[in-house]
Structure formats: structure tokens, C-alpha cells
Image (cartoon, rainbow, N blue to C red):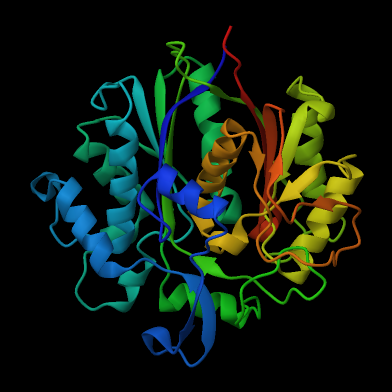
Length: 385
């Protein structure tokens, strides 16, 4: 039973459509900007952040606020709703159907509400946000929330695949979204993980990550009308339980996830165009990923990271980056790793620094995160007869 992509959408500082975002990447555009004392924080940092006025106007144009339980939506609620709305609008589905499941991926959600004095504490709970989104579209099923650090977006897609293959649903709407706040930025800064310059994944002079805001949605289904051209073939999640924030130095969890999908997907390494990896530009993450990729026998496979375009978009990353990787193979391209210069990891890997051509039809996705969690999946473009 195949699980295929029905539609998708991206809402980011680079644009409010998949096409806008992908075209910007082809031009080498980046949403990263330097912020000094934003929100009163006593330090500089690079980030990709929405223009509030532009986002608010777009939200008012597209979302019927009379169908919402509250008129004062947060930025997180706005981008998640917009992304779901655009994906559903371009899909031939009835979102009210009991055969449709909504899945929300986020690491932080409405956490900034904890710093305000007048708010409904229930709105901080991700389950309530997921339910608000589902109910907006008239869906009465209990939605699913996946919040598993940086791998959340890919985990959510793997869960969707499993639900669909079980026959429990015909469609899954997978929404990944996160926004930034003083709490989130300060937290990463306290870990000495932030860079004040554009990030440089896998580079010898990399010195930290950038953060970003985005929302992205993929709708998956087992109902293939012949128009759908992407399949999520196989996925795995593994935990090496190394440290609350530090990954395994030998990439054990990532290696286990990689080995699983390579073994059970039926896809040969020679058929894979590239691996889109986490590539946050922190010293430990990039080093660990390079070791895991080499141990999995992927030293010659082209590798890219999209963090230099968007920063680390947290719970949206796994969905956003999968959509853009699909777009790249639709065009026969392999996107470059923006910001990469000279290889600075011990693992023998092939990091792509310029836009390249390919005629292959599959790609591998790899993510890792806090708590030792790791996730990998293989996606294949279905060739029409």
C-alpha cells in the first residue's frame, strides 16, 4: 500500500507559497537577518523572522476569524492555520470527513503566552491548538500532536504513514510550525549554540546555529488518483539516550535510523539522489551526522542542509525541508548547502556547495535532536507510465 503526497504548502519569511520559497532558494536567497537587542534581549543573533504586518494582512485575507474560538490568534496559530488552509484548498478532499486525521508537529507552540499576564493557560497546550485547527475545518476527530524536539516534523510524517497503512484513515494532514520568542532564543543562547553570523553547516569555521520561523503542511493519502507523484516509502525513529542535549559522538542513533530505512525501503544507495540532513552548524551535531553518514556507507552520496536559508525552524523543519527536497527533484536539481565553505568534520561526506543536476528520483531525509532522538525516511518520486 503506497502512501502518497496529495498537496503541500509553505509559509515562511521567504514567501507564502511553495513556489515562492523554492524559487528564492534557486536564487540563493536567505531569510536570515541579524537582530540586535530584539525583544530587549542583551545580545545579537541571526534569525529568520516573519514580517508581522505582512503576515497579519495575509491571515486576514485568507482565514475566517468568525470560525475561531478567539479573535486574537497568536503568530504560531496564524501560521499553522494558514499553512493547513493552503494545503487543504489545493487538495480535492473534504476536511470534515471522519476519514481524515490532523497531525500537528511543534516543539514550542504558544509557549510565549507564559510570559503574559492575561491569557487562557489552556492555549499553551499543543493539543488544544491542534484541536482548534481541526475544528476550524469542521473535523471532529481527535488530532495527534508530535513534539519530539528537532525531529518532530519527520516523526509526524512517519506517524501519518503508519496510520494510513493501518487503514485507520484515508488522509492525514501533517502540519509543522514554530515561531521564536525571548524564551526560545534565550534558551539556545544559554547553551552557547547561537551564532551571530549566518550559519555554516559542516564548515571548519562553523560556530553555531541560527533559528527560524516557518509553517509547512503535507497531506498524505493511500487514495492515489494518478496525479500524485511522491511516496513516503519508509521511515524510522531511534534514540541513543546519550545526553539531554548532546548527540551521540559516534552517531549511534542516526546510524540505526539510516540502516533501517536503507534495509527496508527496497531503495538502493545508487538510486538515491541526495541526503537532506539536519546540518545545524553546531560543532557536535555536524560532527555526529558526518560520522553516522560515513558509517552507513554514504560517503559518496551528495549531502545538503537547508539551515543556511531558513535557520533551524524547529518543529517545522522536517516538513519544510521534505517539501523543498521534493521540489528540487521535481526540477532535477540538488540544492546547495548555503554557507558551506571548507569541510570541517571528521566523517568522510560529500557536502554540496553549488546547485547540481540529477536524474535520480529518491532522496533520504535525516534529523536529530535533543534527548538523543534521531529520525530518517526515504521518499521516492513515482514515475508515470
